Image (cartoon, rainbow over all chains, first blue to last red; front, side):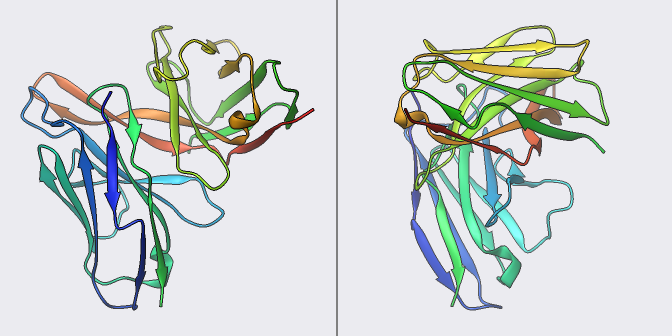
Length: 111
Length: 125
């Protein structure tokens, strides 16, 4: 089974400042297609999760361009270029190469 | 605009079976995958499994022995059954649509793009 880890598990950010979340998988998520099978989801307080990034670096429809994903193999990063108040919540990476596994989540709040 | 709505008992006794249904409105369940995810209190998201409208399924290995997903195309809904529940199964349960978000060469890549609002299930006697 693929195990996902994230760091940090908690992050407090000043509005307008950048933020970065790391996600690591226990084995490479590189698919034979040449793409990395990783999604990022955000669960805002009191809401259902929403898809942010798919295939490690592609923004989902309607996602602001301040969100970006990068990485390959076993190491991935979600970056928010300038955090806004509406970005608070828990961010999860999820591997999709073998069934599905979520990371433990990173809680982001505003200073 | 596709909308999903979970329904089912909010309280289940230990050792009994948890049964939830996800009603789909604004679109057909045909030709999609449909998934269940849960959020236990104080913990992170856990993927439970998915089912395609053809009936094919894929389950979380850690839950596979207790979980069955099914769907009813005539009612445009899909369901989750989890047997022998314990307090550890207490969670908010979400249903989600799994859509093709990218086509890479000959591969379709799927992500959970539409979610229900979630329903709380408490396992307690």
